[in-house]
Image (cartoon, rainbow, N blue to C red; front, side, top):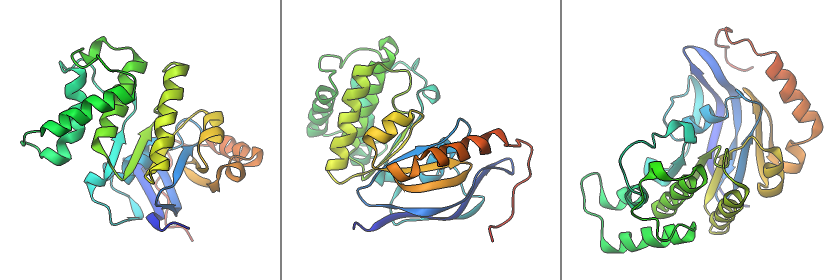
Length: 246
């Protein structure tokens, strides 16, 4: 069995003192392929942001020995401004900033790797196009190419297949499978339970609280999904932050 890479210990994450995710404990192993699933508003994206350090825990801990540069993060499409005047190639080249530094020059081999990444996602010849001129599926391919260039140990994907066509979804799932085969740790927030069952061997099912975490066939049981749905229906958006778990 692979070593524990990231450990959550009674983790609570909140906005304005209201818990978005609370009392989550468990571990992610090196090289694992894990889906984070649950109802809308369950805290899935919040948890992902806590993992990369974008949101600080209100209580509990996230323990690991990784640097920020070890994480590759793909936010939801709605969080990305596509009106910024930048080309496809320059967007992908942002994945090389770990090698170049904030003000460094990108080496010629990184440029070649960026072109190879675009080819790998099916966008050869798109280098000079403006990102605002791309379809949703094409833009998501660009962001996956950027992650390929970044070459991170841990890859976090927030709703990566939302509002894109079926062919693009299949192609990007193939890249996810390749990352997994390379021994990288991949964690993806997903709303499509069939995708979870078909492509992700491990699942964390949450409804602000942890419902289950482990092998997907066990976690995504009818009973657990019913529990998650019932908890979503009982949510009180004005509830005060809770105390420590017993």
